[in-house]
Length: 158
Image (cartoon, rainbow, N blue to C red; front, side, top):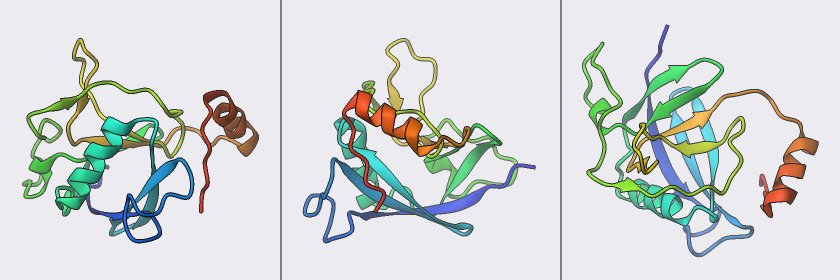
């Protein structure tokens, strides 16, 4: 059974805003849902995607949208503005701003990763607003540390 649930995303950096408090190489956002909150990290190594996500959050774009696509063991997807007032059974997943974002690769695509959605366009551009959270398998700290070391990423969970 697919459950749609609403989300609100709050821009946070655990200080006064995105630009005024960065204690590591990442920026953070809080996704609030009726099922609980998720703290997500936006990698500074993907600046176009990070800046676009921050812009949409600050505009209130994501407020009251649904996670409209849930594939157990794979991902949950949100960010379609058409989901805000969607009727039960309405097909979702095609809405968003008129622009796309050029591809950036800068973070591991592992359980808990926040990633930009994209269709099969030849330039591999991302949706202007849709994103998903990887469910995937649980990975241990040693494996994550080795990936971070290889990519030069410094992650601080607090």
